[in-house]
Length: 89
Image (cartoon, rainbow, N blue to C red; front, side, top):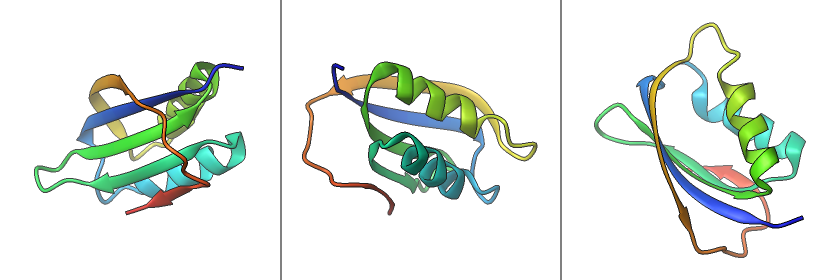
């Protein structure tokens, strides 16, 4: 399994709707590492590391919430890091 690390910015209705906590639960269930945090402009920033398939599964799980509405996703691949878990910043 090839590991990848992605830096992702989510915009839309992504703050004050449980986005970060849903991200953490999904990442933990899939064995992904990285972090997620709110940004001052109302978007959410994330770095997540694992297989591309698991990262896509995580994003799909986040989108199943009735409260979260992702309007745009901006992502780029970044160098791997040695995170041991996924955490909320």
